[in-house]
Amino acid sequence: MRLLAITILGLIMTIPMNAGEPAATAAEVRPAMVGTTVPDVTLQDKDGQDVKLAELVASKPTVMVFYRGGWCPFCNRQLAALGQSQAELAALGYQIVAISPDTPDKLQGTIDANGLSYTVLSDASGAAMGAFGIAFTHKERVLPVPTVYVFDTDGTIHFQYVNPNYKVRLDAGVLLAAAKAAAPKQ
Image: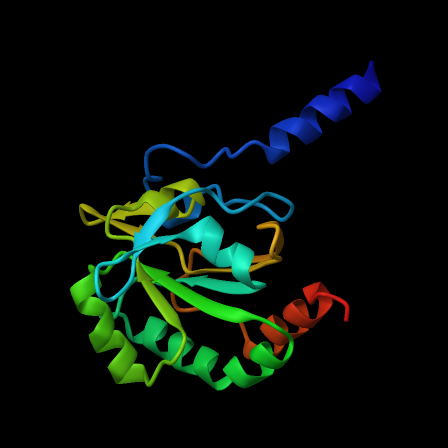
């Protein structure tokens, strides 16, 4: 009986508990956990072209960052620092994808301001934030809790960092260590 309860609990833990309405606060989000897979959502690039997230992740191991928007100074510092780690991540086989609720027309400003050469996508509809369970409502606006995921090409999450305190971001050294640990063996 105990084994059955543990099995059921394990299955429940893999079901996305995060779909639905945004959380009331950043502290109440229920993020997708390590071992779950990338949701089947469609986002837009800076030109407004559709990008299927699952297909993008399937093309290459991925470091995915959700940020609050180009207006957020903490986000801009994180995006710029991620750009500085881009060569090391690429050497490990990774692509970088950054996602925000900014509309596609706002993305180019963030790309230019931070000198970004990696993929930046719009989740203006909130579909990805909701599917990953990191959406919350702040002053009548839906935002993501700043989050970093590391995926393999099967779309499985191997690393997750979520912090409701938007001022605290993942250290680049920790991200590189997580990426190395999850990197495909060659």
